[in-house]
Image (cartoon, rainbow, N blue to C red):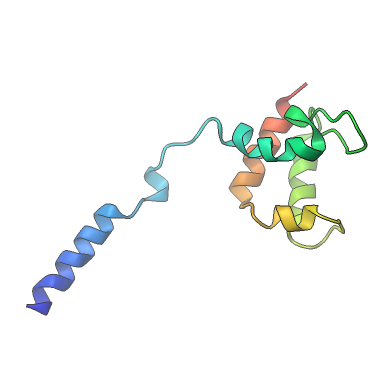
Length: 102
């Protein structure tokens, strides 16, 4: 009986597991992720206070800074902790969104 259940379990688990390649691209991913930046860097990266504005900065600069924070290459008080939660794809999405803001 176990011999029949194992192949069935593998088929069912394969049908239920999400396939990253088959998932559609979320066009709002960058905007949604950038919302968490608003507390310090302003809505849509338009800082009014002491934090650096991110809106309109070159995409590559934002990506490099975020990855450096995440990887411990750039010192910070809080950004190194926040950046650890982002994948490369998420960093690229938020960087693209913020760099497109004017």
